[in-house]
Image (cartoon, rainbow, N blue to C red; front, top):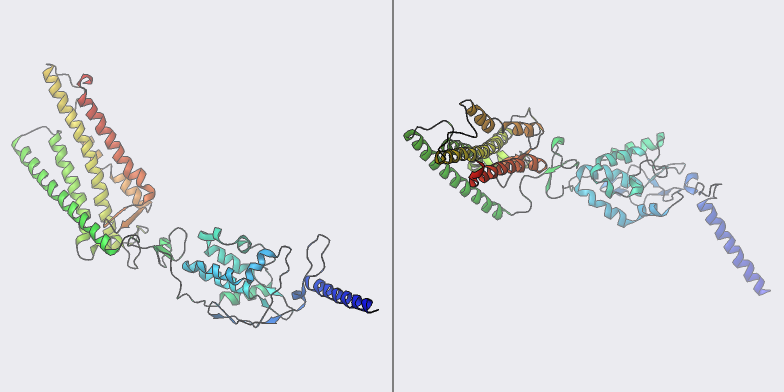
Length: 422
């Protein structure tokens, strides 16, 4: 008799527990999905925490139940570790500013008089647009704005979204990740990261290392200037004494020295007081970039001038170096022909040929220089103290011209070493 009573008591307890669990979870529909749970029938509870990321939430009741077929990913929304991990986006100011309303709404969903949880898709769309550059680092279930389990689109949801978006979440702790710096100039945003641009100073070198590098640049520039001045003086004196033809190695050396002398002046600008920062940096400490053609500020003008001097005249010097090897080849050809007692020349030059040599040396470098300015691919380099081509185009517009000149010089040098081809 006592045993039967115990069985009846235990069975009744289990039956009551199963009934309560069924009411909480809800019966399954014909497709095996879970039916609406209690929160849809008015199950709300008071907020225990009224502040989220430093802002007071604009409601008093919340709900902690979720009606989803696969609950496990959504349980992470209740995990403190998940929200702690989400704070890694704090270093992306625009993204973090848009994520905070969504994270607070997910952690403490609003519960109205009917118990309806209100999360609007507007919050998600705004956050994903702001975090486009790092969207792959956001969990899939959180970045899926079309998920109807988390986001709705009715009028109540819209009202709640507007309330959350109107909260002035604290931005004082937001900092751009190194080596980025905060900026409001959308044209200088780096890699799709809004509100952050590349800082001017090199992040991998200390002030002492940068100072040593600037001293090396100054010494090398002075050496180049002195050598070019002596070269110009000697060539000018020689041309005054010996009246030679218009195209010869001496004149090529003269123009090559002139080119490198002008290019050196582009590096000397930075050593005037406060000039380096004007050339390579913006007023808010970002790396200078020629992104606006209508911006003729002092910084923009100095950056453009330093780029044109260093790039155009360096290429001109390279072209004149190629012409020098061709002129040496012609002189060597004359010597060979004089020994062979023949007046036949392989490359006869007319006076009009000078137009070609001067045109290729002075005008040809203008083409890539203007193209880089129009493509907005010129930026400041705080180490060298000048504005240069961005790394994206250095192969095509810096390395390629050097390679072409090197091949040309090697070709004529090879001809001079093998007079049998002359």
